Image (cartoon, rainbow, N blue to C red; front, side, top):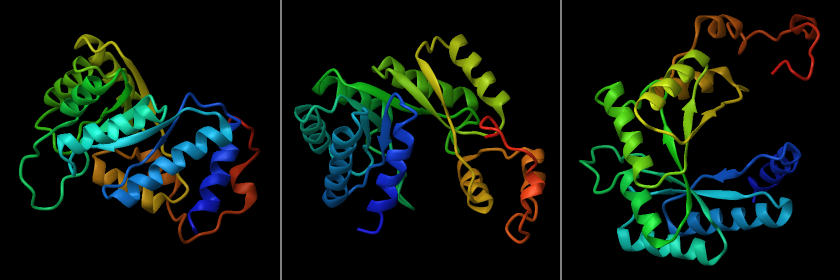
Length: 226
């Protein structure tokens, strides 16, 4: 498949950095789930790295989720990234939220569970406090760590971390990082997810899509530049 070659090329390059784990996004239908499972097994066999599938609850029944979780456990997969998932347009209140999924997974087996967190507040949240309480529910249900939405303002992450501590959320809060290879696309993602793009960043990429920068524009680049 066309996606296969660049995927494995990226995994081979990044594996040298020895990440704690590699998460793999999840598709709703059975074919997508099978592909996710195949990729996870391939990562483990090829690199020895821990691979963690994303699992969403918006598009599956509790029985289906239990069966998927049990299958993962039986195949040696111990780490899952538990997410609610995106609501289909026009849908009402979901039957399950991420906290419910965490509880279900812990009921199936003693999974290592990562959940999502939002330093700049989830777009659907009523308030920053409501969003923080939702994260606490996920942690109280058994989540072992939180991975944040990407951000470009480090202060937003530091403030969020401090608020988590004040709220009694005592798990690791892993900062989400989005490498910017296409600023227009990154801005689109940011607009969709309530992420602020700092003025300095907008200025840095101003005209980038239409004006080719000479190599000298960057100045000397060390391995710490990015």
